[in-house]
Length: 479
Image (cartoon, rainbow, N blue to C red; front, side, top):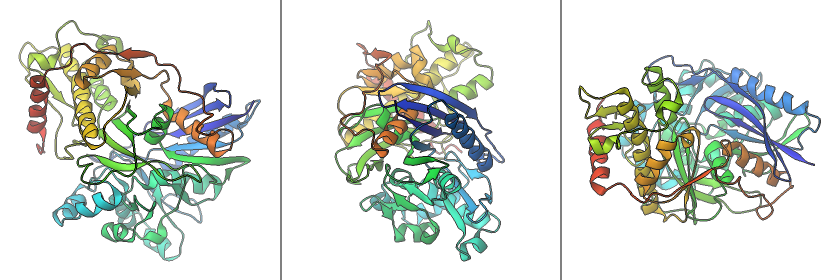
């Protein structure tokens, strides 16, 4: 039987999974890497450490009795690296998607009225989340970057282009990853000269944009046949292939994506991100709309570090009524607010604390805050492009019973809790099957059976939803 290998290089770890043509999906390896926080708002990874973990996963896969026929690579999306393409040496640490060091530069561009251009051409608002300003920062601050640029040896791109260059000698990215930079034209699927001028990123230093499935060289004897952003891989792994089908992944952040029927207009997608879902080799671009919450599991882990709970079983259920109905709210804006507010100056807050507030109350409000902010994202998404059917969710928080039940109430519609915790890896592997010519859209196996279906008979009242929106306004522009 034939297998493919999915390498999921994520925010906190690098994972490897095997997928058989017949459908069996198994874990191979996983390695956590360091989170480097040199200053407030700065988040970095060591590119050498990331590459080493990718290499270890490849070594373990190659040593299996049945080595994989091909590889798919999923990446962090907006995380960027600068390196010497002649020696392979990184010039600085990777700047991670969560990093906000470019906020001042972004605010200057917004004051100059540049957001109309980024929304109309790239489909994205101005925000430090996206790659363009971070790439310019590396060009300005990474030692030797301008000299390498003049000599034609500068690698300046998203993390996938670094891995592909080092593993396969191919300086390329795919259209989903390029769509996260603010430098790609959504209509053409190619780098846009005006956007590159706006951010001061030299277009000739950027990697070639290729379809999501196809040829990306080979790592040793293993061909790399798919390259994709982790969230788009998860969308594919959820089985969301038709317009209006949506998923939410509750990982470090919470990211909702829905397949769109074509490229949604900027006016219709106000508050949302327009992006590329995937491009299968030989087929037209498939589009998506997206919204996110920067801190989901990250907020839970932060609260655990403060001692608000010790084990996850403690926050799986609560005896008290919902905290928001008792006047206690938490806004998970620890890294600012994304869709639909787009305010990086917002601060995380509990509101309504009293002398009788317990740790359990605070955690109940925290879980509800993530769910309520995700519901705001889905509401905005539905206005941009009507959603169809149940919403499929995955990620660590989908294991929390209280969170799932409350999210169902906040959304006011059924939820499907995915049957696998690694749908990014599954979607990446499925794309690799297609890229290797071992399957097509019609012959792919269905996603794993759902673990749970949540149908709430008592959606939250509009008064409760308004109470949360009022709390969001309090934390907006706090810093």
